[in-house]
Amino acid sequence: MRKGSCCMFTSGVVGAVLLIMGIGLFVSGLFQTLIHNKLKGEITLTEGSKIFASWKNPPPPVYIQFFFFNLTNPEEFLKGEAKPRLTEMGPYTFRQYRPKRNVTFVDNGKKVSAYTVKSFVFLPEKSVGDPKVDMVTTVNIPAVAVMNRLKGMGFWVSSGVSMYMGSIGTTLFMTHTVEEMLWGFKDPLLTRLKTIKPDTDEYFGLMRNKNGSDDGEFVYHTGKQNYLDFGRIYTWKGEKMLSIWKSNQSNMINGSDGSGFHPFLSKEERLNVFTPDLCRSIHMRFEKEVEVKGIPAYRFTPPRAVLASGKNNPENEGFCLTPKNCLDDGVLDVSVCRNGAPVVVSFPHFHLGAERYAKAIDGISPVHERHQTFLDLNPTMGVPVRAMKRAQINIHLERVTGFPLTRNLNGTIFPILFLNESVVIDDASAARIQKLLLIVTLVSHFPLVLGALGVILLLVCIILVIRFYQNKHLPSNHPKYTSNHTEHPSSSGHLISQNTLTTA
Picture 1: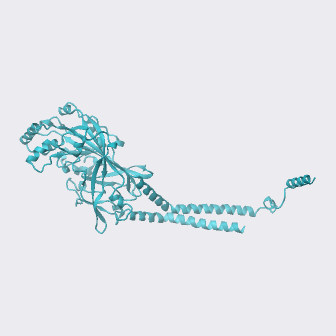
Picture 2 (picture 1 turned 180 degrees about the vertical axis):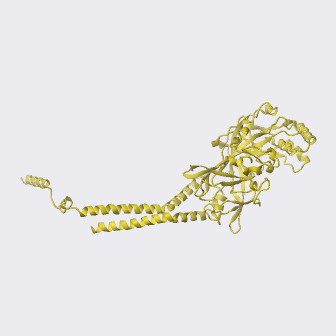
Picture 3 (picture 1 turned 135 degrees about the vertical axis):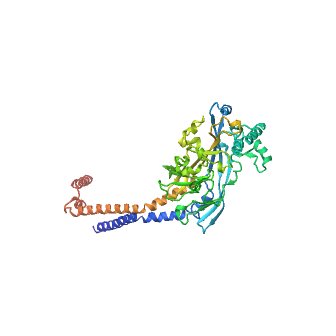
């Protein structure tokens, strides 16, 4: 009984201590605070941090898909007899490489500057069709850009240029290969203009000069001083704000570049992302919880308010530079940062836009799952585990005085192409994050483990106490005490019988 008493005492004392420690540590949040502080110190843009190397050279492959809209009834549309009828071509898929170059720490390591150099390699196995062969008919963007630049210069000037364009065969639409549309071709109108204005580039392409280029110098907060500033842009091209829009709010450079966010994200946060392609910042809101390669994530996506018109979202009033001609929801005129070309951006198929834009064109049908932009972020680390950046390039076609080609145009937002820039975390990075998240979970829940062990030991102690008192009150003639000292009669008789038979 002495041994039993010792076990009871030990399990009871140890169990009570562990339970008290577990409750105390859980209430105080000590271990959770420790692991959170450790992560905040590790997730910084500093040499040797767990995330710096992958920030400089992202290991997951980034793909960019181009989907062109081919116009099948140019004559009918030009005559005003029918709305444009488009068919979607693609995808034409490229692998995008985007390492950061000239990485330099400034302000005593509180900030880091870098250039993101982008290069593209065509992937035929992930594409539909050959960009060198496939032909696409679309808006003659150089011609429309020239006409747009001549607005307000008088009827006679416009008429003269119009006749000149007609003499060299320039029309409102053009047909080229997909490769020429992307990477450039020699345009006859631009070639003629170059003789008048020598600094004119006689080549045109939607992605011309983009291969091997960068978007300019970014300076980021490292997060060393405040974890909430991790990856936040401090300046772009040496400026803290833009100067192309009408209001300070529209000109603000907010948030990160989308490649990373601070750790310990909440569902209530508004995530700001600055996009040079849009010449502005946008924001994203939590949509739902998802899982990518075993990693839990929050999906953030731009709400309708991001590209809403100023009348429906006052935050966007500064993006309309011509108040009498403001566009409706879902589109953004970026001609101010496209050398005056009437370029309008939107989400693919005018997703989240006014219905009239999609209804004005045959072949356009927005689908949320196929056309939304989103970021799937692990909330603990703020790391993107999957992302889809989708955008559509459109041309604003409207009547221009002095150009008969435009007499039947009525302000159509004409889709040229949409792109899908996607990335999914690679297996090696996913395994590292899963391991780190497991450590974070175990350390954070260590007080609960202690408390659970304490409860188990206390239950063992209670069972031992019950058994001890049950045994203490048993009578002395109980079989438990006599069974080891008394032979069963039948057994004894059986043995005697066997011995007797043997002797006989």
